[in-house]
Length: 507
Ligand SMILES: [Ca+2]
Image (cartoon, rainbow, N blue to C red; front, side, top):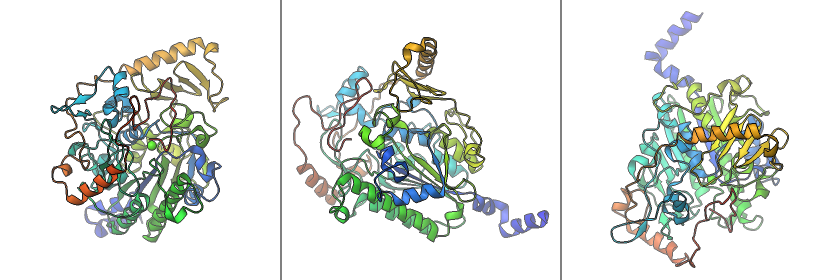
């Protein structure tokens, strides 16, 4: 029988290429922003807020020791490169190079344009990195980013279509408002910049960002050619601040809960579209959150928040659904980093892991498909030279700054046991130093954001700005505080001693 089938396959799909492509799974990766561990129903969250994500979790496997990174940009760098963010200084966010209190930690001063306007040094994901979409494109995939990017907002080579995505929709920066799609905080400038684009052209729309991101995802799923596998990376800004009122939930829910409810509704629509287009059986759906929530309360039982390396900052929910391949209704407690997804996904689609810049991520396909024990024994969570505490996990032990915890007996990191383990502290401290020494020189980051306060992100897009953008941006800027008292900034100060307190809706 076998030779006949092979012959049939060759006849039906000349060259065999379409056949191979058809067998490859589609990948839909959905990411939420700043949601707490305990916000989801499957982790004990408020009933009725996340029924769609909960259903996805019930249909797939839930990871309970899945580590992202403390903030948005670093998680995205780790996901898309499979490498430790500090290797390319991606543990520093692009906007941090415009914040005097962050720059002071590097011994750097705020940059200025020749006209004296304070501006920031340009930072983005190094184009020498082999990105996940680039690797999947080499395997015949079409690639789309829908939603948030946060790996460079200015130079064309730093934008999504310069880093492996065939299609782009959404925004480049860190936190848009949900109805005007402006980034309110543009360190060092304090005024809003427009940040909404399709295929890197300015886009005028009306609607709530979470709904618009779902609309685009649903539209792309329907338009996808049947003979080409796809990777759709759908990165919601929800529930990152600034939070806004949502009319359809205003009577029943506070702003944050309403944002979460809308996120869940959007996920439900995307899952329905996968089903409706007959894609469910051959699509690996992954849902993950990007970093911890802003308060310890929403991250319970973990300690810490976003922008810290305690479990509450980095240990995030992740669910994977792939019918017939990944166990439904299961929980897997393997030790996995978000960096591992790149080599895992590339392996699953038959791609190569050979590349110039060595991977830190590990292939977890046998962990997910065959329930094998995970290969990971160590995770370098934070290097020296970042704004957060140097942090390393080895086995069950986790060193956070100078404090040591045993996650097996104390997952909430309540009891510092450093004094009882001087040898282990010495070894782990030496390991942090050894790895941190691999940080390359920063260089002088000679390029400056020019103009200091553009109308729209994307240098090319800002060269001929349509009047409608100017009108929208001016209207938003008029509602913003026009000055700040000395010592205060529109953005939170850098964490100190591993701690940060977010006020308001936090950013
Ligand atoms: Ca985030």
